[in-house]
Image (cartoon, rainbow, N blue to C red):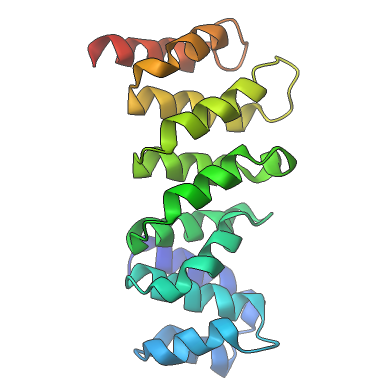
Length: 190
């Protein structure tokens, strides 16, 4: 059991009430049973999350849509688990979906984990999406500075020269300046 699965199990145990259905979903090796959970009516969110996580980590693309929905959830712990499973899934649709979530102006409050996933994926969509998101969030009074910080850090890790003007614009920002300096130094080393 990897750390993310253990975290998922611990977190959902209370939500599921340690029910027999909960234990069954954790123990089954039947991918069809897990896939059925994703499409059956009236299944609780915890059951869908377990099924999507397990299928995604196993590389089963039937989990993709459920994982993308969980990546954009208001509960950060659900987002973390979904991002982990999406990374393991390796579905070619993941970068586009993460970019759409990261750049959605109506969902900026939930964009932290899509931004981090884009950095991890290093896909062609990653740098443009991080730049577009950061550009909107550069105002010092913007409440989504954590998302902006993740963009700056991600652009530093990706070390793409296209990001230089935005990273320079982030230098005077009180919460982003240090990360922007580090990101710019990575560009010089690349």
